View 1: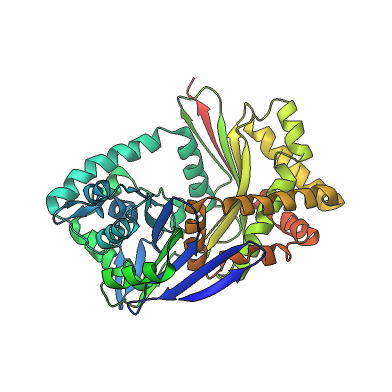
View 2: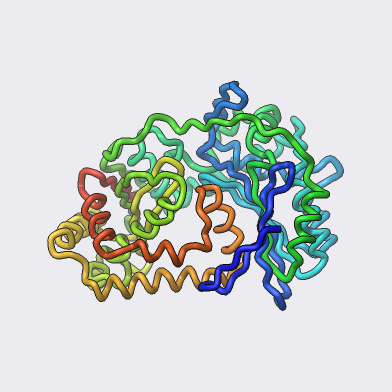
Length: 423
């Protein structure tokens, strides 16, 4: 396997691509008892419209999440039973742009890894099992619909984006999953679950060559269709609507505020923009900012307030949200502070402090095997080598963050989602 050293981080990465197309990435951690194996698929809830080998497919919303549920079924039972025999602790998740299956174990690494690779490579759907799962997923959807925290951000995405499928919930709706059949699942599996569209990442006290050998022996070779994803027309920088309100059984209003930004092109620029967006949000309204202190001391926000940057294929935005008795006053204060910073600039001392803090968070993240696996896979799908982030940080200057802030945090680019108490 090919070895790359990252001396600034004290990390070493081994990687190679199997003949079938699967990319295998290994970060050895000598002396650690735990091993983490993570198999990621470049397929998420936003991939509902695509063309595979010239055939157009428009799948119902929620298929990626439905597939994640059903992949644990195998012809001879459930993969969970296999993991339990080997002491593995498995799980999975679906996001807007990725589906991942993973297992954590302290021994019998080879058996757990083979089980992980086997069940993801063995789709098994029946009419009966798909119908049975429909009720389980419908309950999960209703649970999210009853959560103000989930609803307020889903409403924000629906308000701020006019075309991109990120405006729809990851799990879909009760109505949309009613359209999913076993044929739907097989069609999407065959389009996206090819080895060339997956990355296997293993972190632990393991031999990289042994991990590669196990993967080579386990993963069957399957052809990859010519795949073209369709996320709809390009978004303008104006939101579809600037305000959306609803009512739920909550004790006080909760809100989510978003500012549309120009999406970064795939590749290293996407990490640069992520860092620019993160630092712009922190300088403007993060916990160390003067604005946060004023809003908190005035009682307009509480400790649950958070802000950040979100970037996906074709879209990106700055967000802020939490509970507030007057979300509209918080929005106005953020816009006013952005205008002030546009005139006077960001305090250089604060900027350097926040930049060091952001760098430190990424360094500490290397202590988490789960975080390493996720980032090595997700950033790879965006054309970025995550472990180069120290070099990328050098490109993030005060002037670039100030320019990003002036361009992005404007009333014209903003949308506000508010959930009020029913009473």
